[in-house]
Length: 184
Length: 184
DNA sequence: CAATAATTTCTGAAAATACAGAACTTGCTG
DNA sequence: CAGCAAGTTCTGTATTTTCAGAAATTATTG
Image (cartoon, rainbow over all chains, first blue to last red; front, top):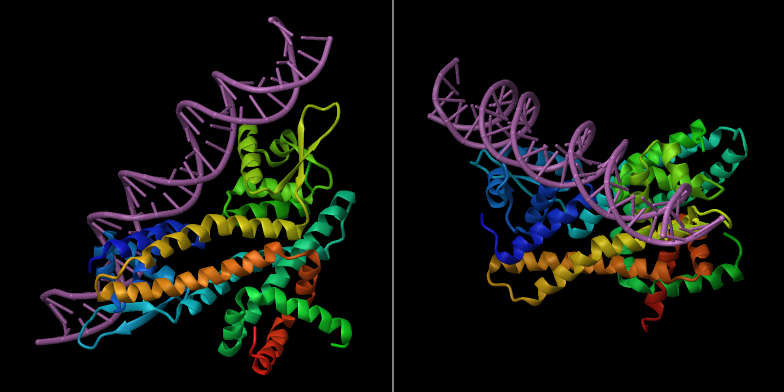
């Protein structure tokens, strides 16, 4: 297991970005390398290629598995566990989206819901609750969209992909549509 | 400046979440408090209410300003600077989205573009570049959508908001639409 | 049921980050 | 231009996070 300069550059870059995506540098590097590798990798490959300790690799693999980003591969006659990326790049994006919603958005939503059930006890809280309501609504909306993406059949996803930045056009049309037929 | 338990709970929660959104705990707390406050706050208010040092508040305010999340208010006859949240909650979301794209997605895209210009020098790189191409396309697509959101007039945004989880339906319709008129 | 290969968990050191408080700068006001 | 209030930057400490390597555990094979 050795990395070409190209691959190395991407792996390191992804490691740096990793922290933004909710995991640390080495976990980011590990994932990047697994994604770019045609053949499954085992813990030793990762430890060696990235020069990180065997123990650290073990932790990292568990972390990636908790995000459901890995596919485990068994090679007959070999005791080691091998890993590849679970699913396509698009699947990866979906997984990360889903997981981040669960970890970041859901707890906030539940706190907000609880708070909004309480009666504001003074003017300060009246205003604060208005704002919390707005945040709540926004988060819920985003959650709704995310859900829709997650449960969308591949055919629709493709439409969405192809639409790309044509989204605006579609909405323009939808505007007219709802004007004409206000029944839904 | 004193916080009610409700407000305090949200402020602390947002502080914890903050790290996920790209800034640290105290910056998160500061922003939450500013958003929930009807009246502009000055550095001392924040320092006092959140029990963090004056110096730290100064750093935090600069950080929030670099995200363009604050609106500065001057009170005549008062030397202090006061701050409120810049724009609506929706504006806030847009700003964060925009800024994160700039900080997280754009650098990766530019790295990928550069790498994909190079010719793969062996099979390993052929496969890696395929994957990088997929990642590149996905990121570019997301970037495109984000752009569209950012440049969307409020009227369209409202449509989008109202649509909520009705997105799926619209796409179904679009599917049929493109089947009938394949000219774009 | 040893022998050993593979993996996980633990422990403490190292590095990075966050923060308080002091020192410093800026700019107003008389 | 002295005096002071507000704001910023610096410095060292505390906290948190990351990680290597050792120790322990689990699994596999003869």
